[in-house]
Length: 153
Image (cartoon, rainbow, N blue to C red; front, side, top):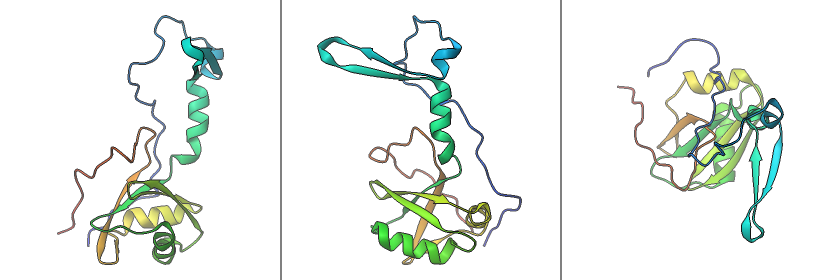
């Protein structure tokens, strides 16, 4: 089985992708970068404009988490968590969150465990491969799909 070398993978923070719905007519000040602004729109609708600094702070906790999906089989949150704790929880515990559409978020409390997961795969549960990718803020589980996978030959 293939292995990679090196230390724990950490993702550098990137600016989130936008869909063009930002206000382009306003100059962005330093205050707006660190604020949450509430704008009232017609028909009683409110729009929250969250500054880049606030987004960065909110997302910081999730950069070293993984999104996993079991290929070809459904699995419950509890069953997946138990199996992952046996496979991966060598130094610390893990937290698993169901994102829907059979995608799960896995948060590690030990960087050694994260490094172990990233370097010792591929991983199988119930004889099915487990896909692994770093968390990204724009992931929408209801629209996400697995287009490519790495294979060890």
